[in-house]
Amino acid sequence: MGKNADFMSENTERTIGKDAQRNNILAAKLVAEVVKTTLGPKGMDKMLVSPLNEITVTNDGVTILSEMQIEHPAAKMMVEIAKTQEKEVGDGTTTSVMIAGKLLENAEKLLDRKIHPTVIVKGYRIAQRKAHEILDEVSLKIAPDNYEILKEIAMTAMTGKGAEEEREKFSEILINAVKIVSEGGKVDTEDIKIEKVVGEGIKDTELVKGIIIGKEKISNDMPKNILNAKILLIDFPLEIKSPEIETKISISSHSELQNFLDEEEKSIKNMIQKIVLTGANVVFCQKGIDDFAKYLLSKSEIYACRRVAKSDMDKISKATGGRIISNLNEISAEGMGETEEVEEIKESGEKMTYLKGCKNPKSITILIHGGTTHVVDEIERALLDGLLDIISSLETGLVVPGGGAIEMEIAKRLRDFGRTLKGREQLAIEEYANSLEFIPVTLAENAGIDPIDVLTELKLKHDMGELNAGLNLFTNKVENVLNSRILEPSKIKSQAIDSATDVATMILRIDDVILSKPSKRGSMNNAGSMPDYMDSLV
Ligand code: ADP
Ligand code: MG
Image (cartoon, rainbow, N blue to C red; front, side, top):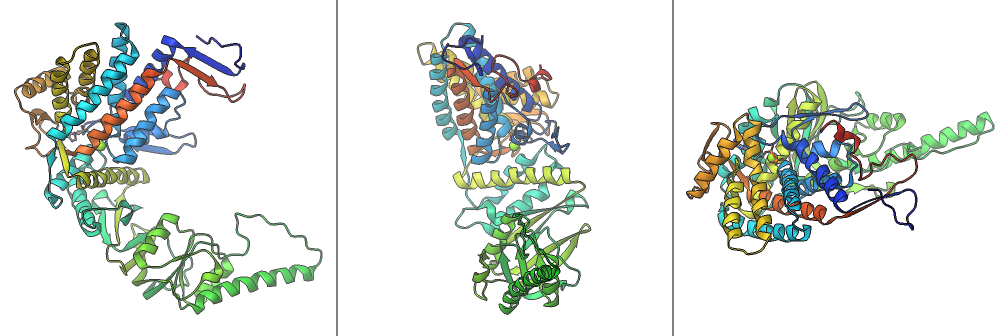
């Protein structure tokens, strides 16, 4: 370990051969171990505390891994696949990380039997291709307007999350939202605005027509509601010295100071006058609005919000047809947004701004209620899982039975296929099949059911041709889960197969880790020793 070539600097550490491989595999396995207990409806949550003491309580694989301060290079690669899965599908992050971890763990067994990594990699790649074929064969085609099935898919996605109790209602909200915004079977998630408010219970979560933003008007003197709103969207500050830029002025006399202040006032007056002249009665500003500008706006009976998030500005723009203006000279009556009404509302004691009767009738907001910020954040993650699963299913029109059924069927057919091959790759294909079975095993384990019994029963049923046999965690029985309507988008599985195989084979190919440390004080963990965070896990 730690053998350095002469040409390498002192700050470089090198681990080669078996050591590097085993160490990387161990790191990857530990990452999978971390998320394992959260899998499925009976999975547990994790509480994450950031260095700044911010708390997140979640069941979501990618959230857990992103918040952990992981530094080991191979472990980081595992985190990346969770992120890829999240980006491509939006759900199935735990599944993909767990399969990758298991592929590596099982590869280790083969390495122990002196099977060369390149043979394992080749076998895994063959298995990956075959798994896709099988997935295509067994996926079920659904019609794009089969909202009953889409609702079941959203329900499965939200089972076991903070949203579980209300999953029926939430699924309906999601389906209604999708119905409103979908165009030719396509849904842009950007079109569904999610706003969170702390207070009342999660059952008060609702789908609202129009746009709600979590901003109140900046002055009590401004009107509470505006009918026939003419909306200006501004992304520069309505103040003289923008806080982003520090300026220094040197003033030597009292009159100079007065002059300077007068100039400042004049320029703000100018700005506001330009706004008033357009006939606007609502202003959303992405930056700050200073006190003097605020005073002038209220005097002109204009409703104004400041520091509106960029994402909200974009949504308001789309909903109202208004253009976002980034230069004072561009202010004009043209390009203003329009809605029937803009109103300040109070939700659970929080003041918000509600844009009703938007020009674009597809503008909608899901308003999440919940007791604490941690609750509403976790509900948002669950709703997004449900929403993205609906969208993935719509996109491909393909769904598969959950509860481990699809993994069992792919494993079974992979084994049958492996037996037809010659050579040592066959062993890798067998291990690939074993890795997929880790999903139903963990679903059972997390629910406190004997995993061996479940696996045996599942194997038996699949061998007898019951391809939809899975573990139903509502009844705790192995049964036809298609009939029990435990459904998932096929895309979750195809992406998980790809991301897990990619990372596993990549890690397997590495036999040399060369780590350059940033400095002597650098805290990077080297590949030859375990990162700190892992000490607590082993
Ligand atoms: P991921 O991050 O991989 O999506 P989840 O915690 O969301 O992880 O768990 C998903 C797994 O839970 C899938 O394998 C899915 O089939 C399974 N699952 C969901 N609902 C049920 C249920 N009622 N019974 C059994 N398994 C279920
Ligand atoms: Mg999920």
